[in-house]
Image (cartoon, rainbow, N blue to C red; front, side):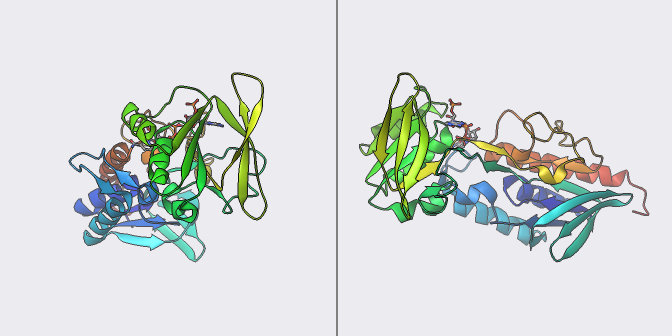
Length: 305
Ligand code: NAP
């Protein structure tokens, strides 16, 4: 194939759309759900020209658009990427694929708190996705950890389902947008608990509460809750490119405006690469650029490739 695209979020599927419209043979490989983070976003209201759409709907439209243009979408996990003289060898559980170029659009993964109880109660009250798991906590008190857009959006979403939503943030100013914060503050069942960090998550079969440590004064407090939604940002998940492409100190792939990595023929698009703003629109833009540049790269290869 001309382009192997790893990841089916906004970057990967947009790359597939642009690749197919340029007449290139492209396959998208996805190990999880199509749409990536978009698919688990409750509502999107900052994608140009789309006033409001659910994440699931936007993901589905993008998926269908790529499919309709003839992109092959393969449900599998690519476990290694090897550079060969003729391109790249992509290996998965059931075999391997050869691609002349690769666009890596693997996104980023949710960061863990790292406190006692988090791993133990993961899936038993500790969640990293409010849209996926919020309904399990209908009518119950929950906590959202973090002060960014994700935490604020999670709090808004959960406030429609849960009795009480406690937003636990380690500072008293929020990184998330003011408009979102204003909406959160206007919800009577949302409580902001600032200058606090989670010391421990406790429970029996399921989570029953949190011990919070105050950051500005001595002391701690216990908060009885049934669910904890961790929303403290993302970290790269680029291990598969280790030794193949250069990354920054945090592990994000270094690529220029052309999305080309340090490895010729390997492009990085979306949240996996070092960039100042991680949004659906910037991921989609990367996907378009990476597909265009991959096309340019293909024209420079000897015809025997
Ligand atoms: P983020 O913006 O990096 O915010 C992470 C939050 O978690 C920050 O408030 C941070 O506190 C806190 N935090 C980090 N590590 C922590 C720890 N160990 N313990 C306690 N708190 C910790 O992450 P995000 O909210 O997931 O957003 C990621 C990106 O996606 C951002 O660029 C965001 O704008 C974007 N996004 C956009 C939208 C939208 O446009 N509607 C929606 C969701 C996400 P400090 O503030 O003290 O560092």
